[in-house]
Image (cartoon, rainbow, N blue to C red; front, side, top):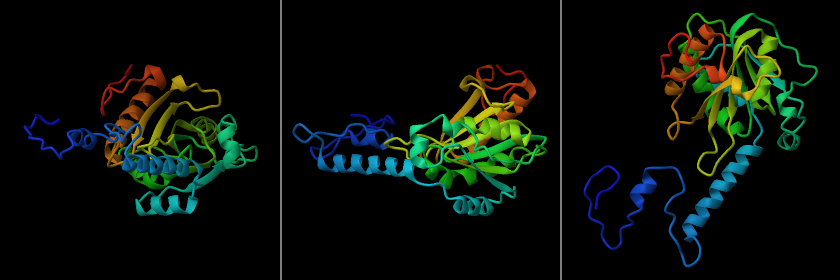
Length: 257
């Protein structure tokens, strides 16, 4: 018998032939069976993964932890904080619309700026805690000459909160780094959403997304930053984002799409 790498391998009576497949993916595959149910070890793994996903959703964004991580990563931008209209986590989860709107008393310094970066807790503040600083540092290193607004930490935030934030900051493009919905194999996945000409009312079709930034199991910071930098350059040349802007690799041609 051959394994997934095409290597010949002899399986003994005590070997698990599915182990090779499980080692090749984070997905829950080839779990086995104990009578009519799962083996105890697999059931415990499932419960642990489910608990980690629930914890990620309900964890509060820790601004001090994010600020410290940004400083350690060498990010020298000022950091501002904003809140959505969702007053608490429970309301945020029940009312997605409130997470897309800025709190009424929000004040942000105007630009103009080429780019605004918003770090939004989303459905996994853990992802922001663990991966936002490394991603931001890698992105900024690839954008020499760009005018970047102060970083914004957004509490109880959905992706679309970046639209009023980017508009208030006078940014030509906004990128929202948001904690993605946790799964049973990824409770710390960070998504990057790019919107050209941010303003309230932008549709999801007007955004570009880079998903699953979470080394070592997902995209690494350098790979995500290379892709984002290419999209940013092309978006600025094209004057648009979303379905008209195609990811053709780390280097995108003028007028991509």
